[in-house]
Image 1 (cartoon, rainbow, N blue to C red):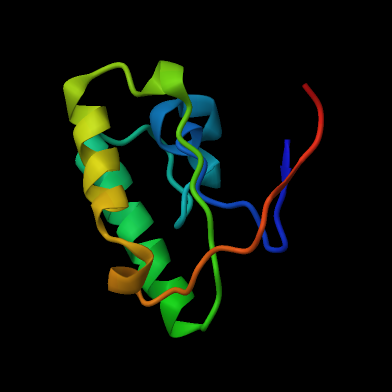
Image 2 (cartoon, rainbow, N blue to C red; image 1 turned 60 degrees about the vertical axis):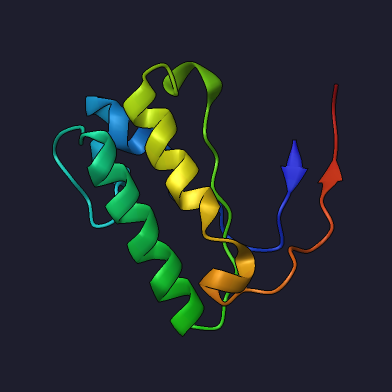
Length: 97
């Protein structure tokens, strides 16, 4: 498990599962399509860059089960840290097996 020096936000499950929809930013009431996930993450990146912060994204392999989901994740990742205005990520410490 990585230990991050900042809040862990925007986990993909918040956008795919009804019971986690209230954790979306802004809070939702229902799952969104892949483009909704991308829009939410890009908005988060812009707000984070504007605030001078850092962020991370977690994409669970079982939830990247459609070409559409994989495509929007690829689009988000294609925006390199330089493109998004962030520097290199801090070192990650892994614990556990």
